[in-house]
Image (cartoon, rainbow, N blue to C red; front, side):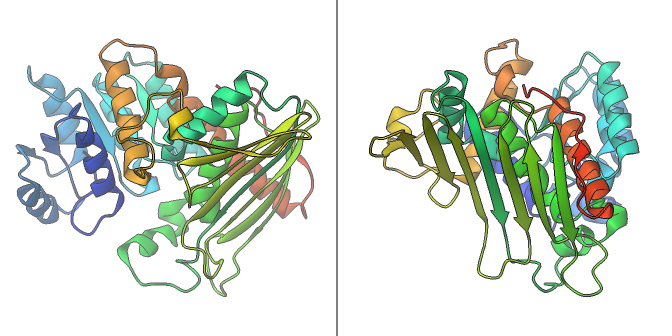
Length: 362
């Protein structure tokens, strides 16, 4: 693991998820840019091998006969590109937290390294790994709601309605380290989720990107209208200043013969509608993706979705290509970066429609 030391949030999530199905063992890490903190963090976790920096770790682990197979990069956004490129160049698989990078230059660096390496690159868009989201994807793939007409995604939080003064807010509110605010932190999740389920990316978007808290240097609210090449229309609204919303993610899709609705607050349930008929409530008992660990009616959620990604990644690394199509990767990361750039271009042009440069999702 690179990053994820004392005081970090997402590093602990990755560690729990990686262990949940017994597919990974954490044995090495450069857990902080501060060598003393890195060593203290490693000692607290009982880590077998601790490194003061990721460059030394990549070189040393690649040279060991018992070196690591994969590395999880859970640093702030501006520190994704360097470690990812170094480990890919060393032939070590990379599992990277989203978004892909803080800048387009960083994204290109990762893309070039991935293109030159036999190692795989994975991006942890964990919401795509919920069982009922995978079921929604299967329904869409078989034409279950007819021709797609409407797409609506909302991802609303309130934790940055004022600055909490935490380690997490410190770097996320710094444009040099985060790159983007709500657009990068949760907007890329919303963008990827819609594409994952529908199999399509919008061809054009029109956006209003705002920093609603006075003096804030990064965006904290964005409203994005969507146009699809096939005629569908939609919208994405992401905000980190929506007071009263802790982590309210929802997806709604409507087609010519039916609709689908999913909410992160009730993740084990998918509402399916057939035109002219009563709505159905599907639960994990109807899930076809075999992504569950507990019996239906026993809730699963955020950590289990992360664990689904890690188990699928382990299978792909060990030669089973079956789950590869549903794993987010480099293409998703590059599309997310283009979404951020296109939304900014549109907002700076007064909400003008701009091309996204994307097409069919994988």
